[in-house]
Length: 172
Image 1 (tube, one colour):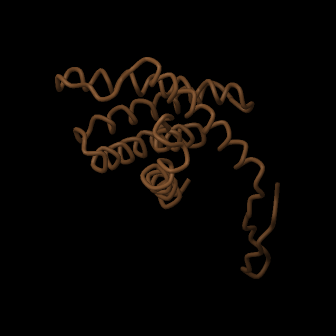
Image 2: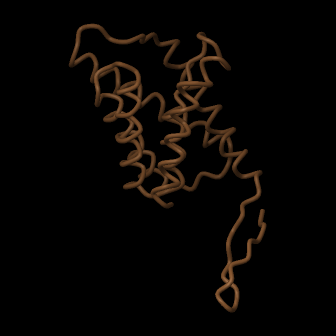
């Protein structure tokens, strides 16, 4: 995957997270679309791409949230790299295993994030067990739906033709 596509996915998730999600789901449900994007990239690209996108997406999210800069970056880096390593060993093609991976990745992220916060400062951000599991369920659902939507949409592929011309071809 090209750098521009990875950057687009992370920036798009950041824009949705900061502008649209608070109005769609309200204050009761927590979703971390940046984490969903990182896990999606980890499942579809290499471990290095997942590591870098996790670091960049997490640090930008930290800068926008007003928290300690770097904590979310470290947590998302660990999650992205871990999911990518698991993805190289296990082929996941069904919705339920994808949901489980997004759910587990959110639990890992919360563990690392809250663990780092507990070591750095006295006050830990909103951290109830129900809130963490609610976010994990929401992220799992969002990730599974994202995979199904992207699988259902046709992809436009470019094939080289004779004479150096490029012709678009629609494939499912």
